[in-house]
Image (cartoon, rainbow, N blue to C red; front, side, top):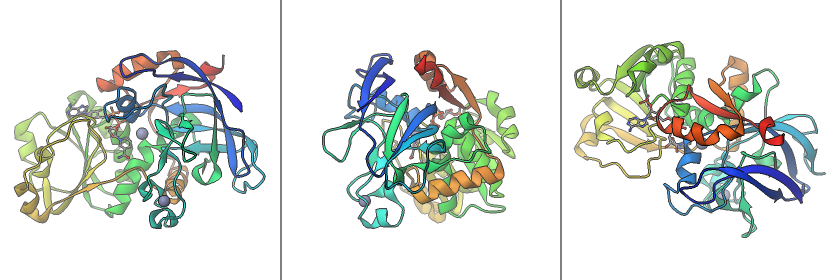
Length: 349
Ligand code: NAP
Ligand code: ZN
Ligand code: ZN
């Protein structure tokens, strides 16, 4: 077994505190990654606080993991010692169902194995995430990371990046598509960057007027303060695509009015309470609501390669592990520009 230092939550109300556990030994198909950086996703906070139900404690969160390969099993082909590697939101799936066979492992019929807060496929091991020093994962679920980019700013691509890239590609965002990104946080700021890079006309929809300058710097062409009802009205029947990244319970209806004919609202934000929906809002303009969960293994690699080619990374605030509880409070307040990333060196001291 491989000893690991980490930070864990012990119940929904506790702070995260230092914690030790062991990873499995490196199997024939496994890659051992010495973790260098791990992003802080709002999903970490939802799960630590048991906002989705059925949380497993102690819980080591973290699914935006980058680091260096330090050991590989004898069958491993993709990696060698010294390579950079990334691990995202899942570490396994059934590997034989139709979605798995089509590289859509996140929609595995038997359920994907999350990077943490889940029981692994052996039925006993509790998966633990990236607020830790080492991780061991089957190579199928590990991504290659380019040496070209700033590694600490690459970490959030493993969740915030793929979660926004995948649905924008799926609905065919291209030159001239009118895209509105709702919520300027970790996911939202990546959504803006990708939609702009695909040639879309991008509007940032935010409850925080103070973020307007940043939204424009990130590439958004317009900014809509969603608290200003008169301004919101001007955008009725306007957008082809809305990417809803809001982590809180806000009525979807409030945004559906903004969709044009055949407009689509992609839901990626996962509040604990469930918004209401007036079906009349869907009938008008033949609107669609689409949910989307992260991205499969091939598309995640495609996104990472695309980012290396286009020089796209996340805007981050680098923190030491002992700042994690304050980082959670600030994320909940929307006070992060735009992703906290933990320097795992601070855990190795
Ligand atoms: P985040 O950094 O906290 O950003 C969320 C943003 O939502 C905030 O910055 C804020 O933007 C807006 N917001 C927050 N509270 C609001 C409220 N009461 N009313 C209106 N807007 C509000 O969170 P994140 O890490 O980007 O994650 C966003 C959500 O996506 C979370 O629920 C997370 O669990 C989920 N998620 C889903 C997937 C997936 O696969 N589908 C993957 C990762 C994360 P403004 O200040 O601009 O309004
Ligand atoms: Zn995430
Ligand atoms: Zn499967």
